Amino acid sequence: MRQFKKYADRIKTIPPDFQPGEKLWLASENIKTARPAKKHERRWLRPFEVLKKIFSHAYHLKMPQQCKSVYPVFRVSLSKPVKQSTIPNQYQSPPPQVLVKEQEE
Image (cartoon, rainbow, N blue to C red):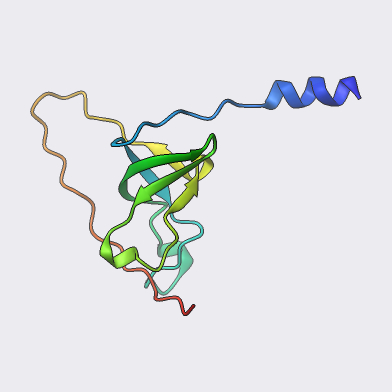
């Protein structure tokens, strides 16, 4: 049993701590969009704002009107932080909007 714990502790990672107001890129792997094929999907959807921390591994994100059919709580493994540019006065245009397929509930 100790060997299992030793191995599990070795590969265990500490989840990042995001604060409300920070922006995260969201993985598109579990979100159905209007694109015809999965291979044409963007890997990361536009940056979303963190509204609050639900658990140590889950965050509530502010979703735009087009994504209202998507539940707004996501686990940390489906996100990555937005990195600010290190080049001064560089303007980065926002990514295009993603159309989410309507899901019948």
